[in-house]
Image (cartoon, rainbow, N blue to C red; front, side, top):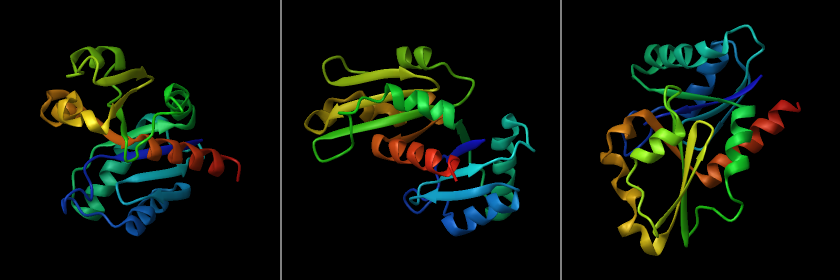
Length: 183
């Protein structure tokens, strides 16, 4: 089955440096195939032949990163089916560009999107949000960024239990998963 591993907090501001080529090697060493990384922010698409229980992927990857890089890096896993559900909720006109910012907040598996959404600093009339399966999609006009609750997200207690990818990256990862599934 095709999966994507979303690593939290690597290669951000010079902290937790993880070269993507070495990360790819780690996944291959863990027995995964069709391994592809995308950009330098910790996105790894891979195939598991079913030899590992799905719930153990994050644990195995986290342990491998600890061994290879000496870092404690949380990993959020999503299957192709779960990414399809997120992409189905992601409005086609929501993108990350010069006029708009759209982030997908991938939640830890213990969290429910609807419950988290109620706790976040969403600003009515400024922020547009959608609860998806295991994620929250957050869109704001760049002209309104200063007033957006998205700017306060990093200070929120739940921020440590999610990892963010922009809408463009979310779409690209899903496309990569579909492409790798068909090979």
